[in-house]
Image 1 (cartoon, rainbow, N blue to C red):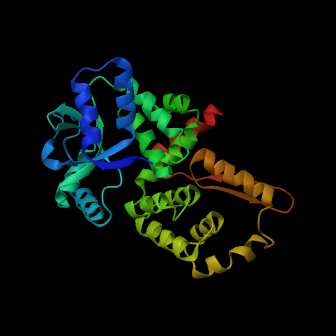
Image 2 (cartoon, rainbow, N blue to C red):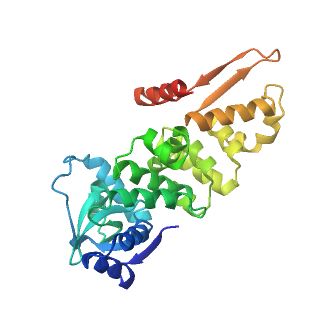
Image 3 (spheres, rainbow, N blue to C red):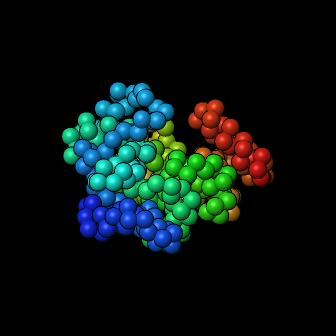
Length: 301
């Protein structure tokens, strides 16, 4: 798990060493340490990047994010570059930074980078991902940083970390979940499988309803998926086991294939099959971008 600390002696010493022009091996170690450390930085010490391509932000989205940050804190840290003298320039996360100001925060969690660290940062983040103690949200944040800060495509990222593109997509989708659900993943209230199922629900209110039901009733991933398919019916939770053995249920081996396809495509996949073995696959998508993403996966395979 990323270490969260004040901008104290440890991080100050690392930044001071960089300013003193350390050797290349030492610089690599410093970049590695910074890549997995989260510091609390005063908003007064962060300046906006003048070359930020995005200049307009949806006011309603900012207000909603500010409310969320006020309640749950900033789940995904921003990234800044050290300018020396305890001053920093924003690299990514301006929307989160603005919303944090609106929420009345004095400081925000941030990853700190140094000048000319692109290649070293990439290696450090890839190494961090391999660590078993990271939770799914922390892995997703690392993937997103590799895409945003190291300018890797999904295909390049897939090659760097040795994971299928569909697996990477599934992780990144977690960052679109409401902060309370992301926090639930970090606190081990729900698993990656639960989060993936919730990410397939378009309505935020429904996502939250299903999340709270899952935590309160200690639902399995399979039970949550059945709850979602049933539209949240109160009978759905209690009838999970009986439905599994009903005459219309799929054989266990077909269910396993369906779940594997859901993981592969990062979308809802339904298999309809009669007693004679005749049926159809249904792969659901939310929009044209999602449709094209699924097509790319099909063409790869």
